[in-house]
Length: 47
Figure 1 (cartoon, rainbow, N blue to C red):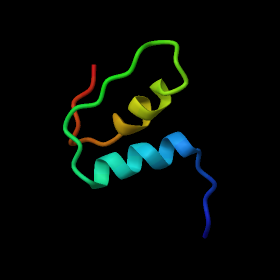
Figure 2: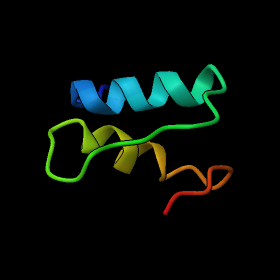
Figure 3: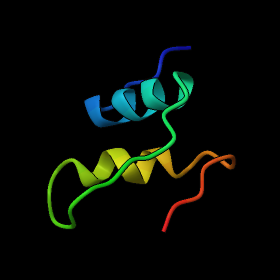
Figure 4: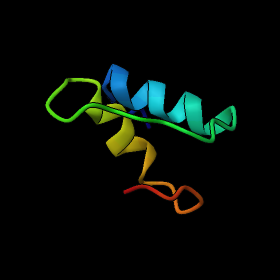
């Protein structure tokens, strides 16, 4: 089954799979979706 995902979701997944430890985003920018998607993984602490 195929799933359509956004570019931001792809970037977040790639960051997760490569072991990125720190990610920051400025509120109100389109890139904040990357951080939002990265925070969905239980192993990552996000505030």
